[in-house]
Length: 80
Ligand SMILES: NC(=O)c1ccc[n+]([C@@H]2O[C@H](COP(=O)([O-])OP(=O)(O)OC[C@H]3O[C@@H](n4cnc5c(N)ncnc54)[C@H](O)[C@@H]3O)[C@@H](O)[C@H]2O)c1
Image (cartoon, rainbow, N blue to C red; front, side):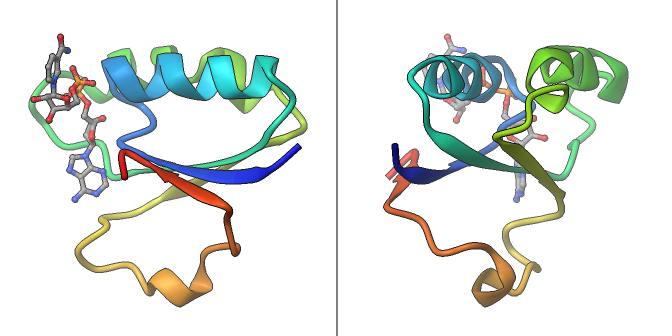
């Protein structure tokens, strides 16, 4: 098991990736700031399964503004 970080975790690709990584047994941190490209509700729905998972940690924030050092140390970042 590795600890991994997924950016855009609430998006179409990111949320599927999060679910798959959790299925594979990884500890997953997801970051997303809910841009308004499409409704936030749809993105929260994308994440609903992961949010109920004990190995998923969600950080709501903009990657351009977050203090990246506050995020957990990870073995991999997606997308690289
Ligand atoms: N969906 C596809 O078929 C497809 C195909 C090829 C490439 N892509 C590319 O892959 C990427 C993801 O696609 P998608 O369909 O999942 O898009 P999406 O809009 O569903 O997801 C992107 C997510 O990133 C988040 N985000 C954007 N900027 C952020 C920031 N600064 N900080 C934190 N979160 C941020 C958004 O809120 C959103 O939830 C895009 O760059 C897209 O162009 C998508």
